[in-house]
Length: 306
Image (cartoon, rainbow, N blue to C red; front, side, top):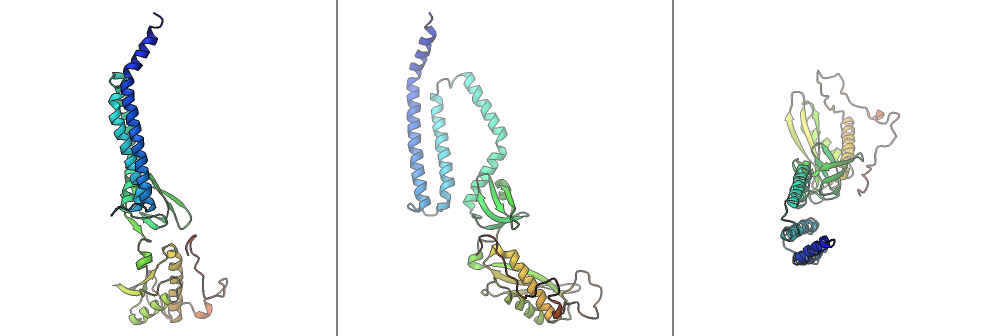
């Protein structure tokens, strides 16, 4: 009969109707659960629903995880009801797709897992200045796969999350506004200079540097008694991690000026003998051409820093 194939198809469809209805019911229930999860996590993010110990910043990544789990559970439950799921051809196709996914997704899954792990660790937030290995910059975007940093030279670093997870991360911003970031610099001064004088000059240089905190006050450590010099470390506090390089520059300038004022020589790396006269810059030559005749340099903060 010419209509035999048509009747066969209709018969197969009618025979599969109960299974298709089950799949539709599972799809409807899944859709309802997805809407319920979206509503709940949106309320947590907005603050209208609070759960003890659950940070609102976790709402979006947790919502994504829950959504994937719901969909995966629905697919597993629906699988036996898919028409033809028991055929050898269908099983072969699913195995082939699974092999392709497993071979091509190792690095993808590693970065995804690292992205979620960083979110729950709360190691840094957008706007923080961090250092990952040799890379330092301000966090501009935190994605599931990569994290974007903007360096002090306005370069963009795209760092894989798996690299961040396996590296030491230094966050300069996390405690800077509450406790202050400690900036430090070291100078080597000869033994013939009284240490009390050296410490007083270093503290004077810190007082002259705008942008540093007065409380907590700066402090000095005598790091070592070297072969040719005493190594002093000046430590100062700042609540502006985004301007740390500008503050270092101004602090170093003030140190040079103060030591020149008092004719105290900062030791050079290679020491042979004491010169007849200290190697300092006389005050009347501080502004030799083409230096501008100004004794104060404004600190220019990075974009967005106040």
